[in-house]
Image (tube, rainbow, N blue to C red; front, side):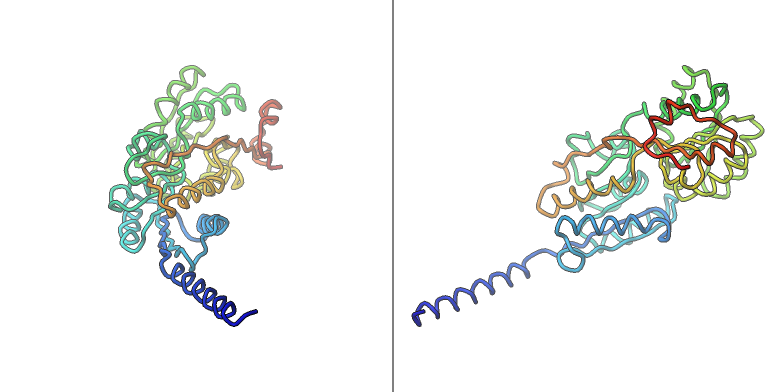
Length: 327
């Protein structure tokens, strides 16, 4: 190689290296905060899956992103405290559940927000529409169709053909409860089932709620989705079994804990499309232009061990529809 070409190659290589180093320095380090209602032990999977899915898209912790997680007691005031403390430290906020999403919209200013598993995001005022969210928030809806609640009640009726009275466990602070009831009442009328609504605000309310179920001669239990309910999954499943009540839930975690049946989206699966939305925001797309996504399918999970303990026979047609059967 001629000396002039050799010097040019060295110079060009050094220039490329210097530009590469400059590009690395100019790349924004995105600080991403997540607020998860619950405790770190059972809910840490959320943080782990979020980090892994972002890594799959090329966003590596400590290189171009820094993830900071906050776990909050599933009470509105505690969730708001977590959002308020974390928002000033991050560039983008990821929240799980409707109450956390509403707290983020209220308290996080204009920073981008991505919610995961929020029910009825249009009705509760998070976004203008699913296709065109507007503002600084988008995400993944856990539910956007009232017919799913009707289907849950119908499933209980199929399992208990003589069903006349169903307890409905709900959290009054959770918008899901308010929006679910009209569709449930409509379905109850069609199925000739009376509903016994019971509100809880903490774990301390559970024992009294089950006493009312017994006194009201409830024959089954429908548990409406809420972050508080999710944190009390084991207690609710145990109490329902002790009371001899077939229970229907939103998430499969309740069924793996001993509940009878669930119909709802996969919580972990909702994280992947949410990280795709985060990736778009990092690359410059406004949340206002990123459509809110809905679950493409709802999973039916049945616990046959619980059915046997309750002396129930699950109809073969319902078993055939199940995505997962716990033996």
